Length: 242
Image (cartoon, rainbow, N blue to C red; front, top):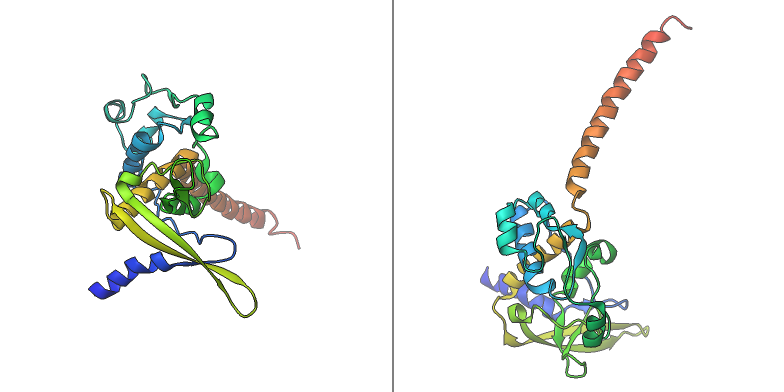
């Protein structure tokens, strides 16, 4: 059993990608997991909100994921005074462009535009690259302006990309990962941290998604009952017509 688990941990280090780029891993996020959403909110505020805002998200909407106003104010509000304020960042677009080359984008709808799988894989595929200005690169988004802000958790990793060509001339890429220095978390823990962060970003993209789905179910049930009653009324009305 231990050998099997070890093999599962080693396999991603030798993953093959299609010609279109790095293969995306499936994000195991769950919008109904309030503990995960709360952990993701904590990670977002502590690691992302320094540069990236979520200007369409208000702090008081975090009540929806089970947090009280006191918890929000004491643990998550480092850049605002009132819980009704939006999750803006103090970094100006001008300073962001000067420091990173491009202004850090707002993350309000990044999960909807990029997709949860893309975000989950992107945040787990940073590696050291001395050729870049900030010393980091990314397998999913090559030459990304963003450095690896979670590197203290994941540690420093290296990447070697090997090209393979078959008899038909098709080229595939093999990604070989190496751990240069350990982080505060192991692989399983870091993947869970990223999953929680992605879960929160998915929630931020559409906070009312779960309630909308629940309302939709009740609407469909109501329409089903209305259809049955309408059909019964139709049969009763036309029963004497041949």
